[in-house]
Length: 530
Image 1 (cartoon, rainbow, N blue to C red):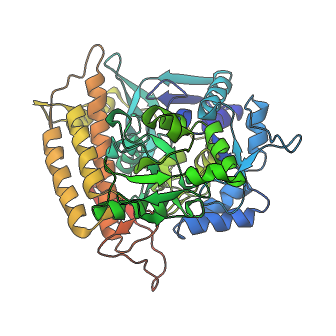
Image 2: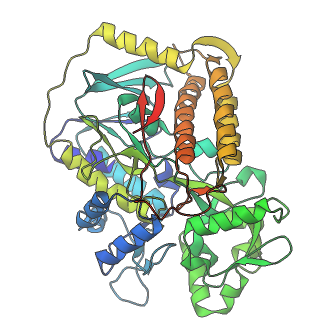
């Protein structure tokens, strides 16, 4: 939405395609916390490099910090509201999420839903053509040049083609490949990664999957809902195993990756709590002033609301321990871009969680919305820098693209259902390519995915006429398979433990060689490394 607003304000002819109703997605369910540069941008740069284990692309960090000036004031002028500090008149309240060395993060009133609504309202005031509840299937290229996008209207069962010399992929992440162990919306199925790969773009560091350390374990219907990052333990919270032994303290000064790994390793030793997690004991916080302030902060942004529903009032009040389990939260990898959002394919751009390289091997709290706003504005202006003419595509070519895509999704009608196969992917990825990995588990995951892919070629779907939700599921299934394979192959290739990527068989970080990024490209349908 930010990229579309910026492009439309620069007199570009913009069409925004949204798989869901516009303004839905992960931003809407986020905590709405947005970082600033803080007192010194060098300090934020240092924090990002530390959290990202120096996998971050420096050019992207520099662009983020240099181009962020005025971004918060801009959205405020559109109607967004940040929480004020009750103790400091006319100043906004600042908090310090996990990974930050100082309090530099702003809190949005009404969390992420307000930001989504503000951007949607601003966009509706612009001269932008909006198509909702339609999925992008394929970026059309001819002679290595962008021609447009093939779309499928999954509510009407009809095909749509948009011709354009420029395409921005802003499809969010792919948390559903780990479902139900994810706090993402169901629409986060890795569409942008697959669309980028199939169009000829590269993916970078797809093995770097962030798990939020504190997610709900029980009841089953709430499994995976987020309870906050490391700072959500407060300054005095501790993690305990089934025997009451403290296995981690001082979590508010640790990264999401460090704490998630500790939890996973302790569970692997057989020391889990009754429902398969560990005990988070935050009770000491309520006895101390700074701990009390931490509880109030997390309560104010709504992160404790799911805790009250799952575990009751005492847990919500931090008056008794409760079970936690890591939940997939973010993909740091993604489509490789330069500091203007361009990919290796002329005319193809990417932004937000679809793009990779900014956060390296670990993303700090409140950086996602910050990055999305800043790079959305950068890309929205960059997209109109060189106005290419729209190249025509023949009806015959469009029909061929459509038939090829249908064959790509499922070669023949069969008895398998996409929704069941998507569930199988989630089970495979969580069990064998989750927080703890090894050569054997990753190869096993790859083999299981191959079996799922064979089943996917015999789906029970129909393409034409009327409501076709099962067809949407089939398209997402294909994108999830591509995303999952890219994660596993990158994880196999990175023979070290770095950031969110932990290999049992290579438990240490490689220090002897220069830091290497994992770059994947698709050649004739096969994923290869550059």
